[in-house]
Length: 77
Image (cartoon, rainbow, N blue to C red; front, top):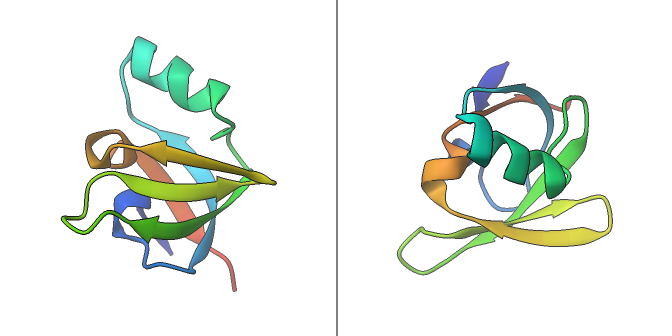
């Protein structure tokens, strides 16, 4: 089931399947480890929901919701 990264709930794991961002944002997300077929986990969101903390491999990364809205993920069964 495909969904946006920004819609994951804390603790949920998913696989990155697509990027729909412009060149600079896309490159930043790739540099942070959000590559296609990588497993990620939403760790937590800030009290007002933005930004969010995700775990990519052994690294914790913080991105804005606007950036997370451009990443399509599929859930892990």
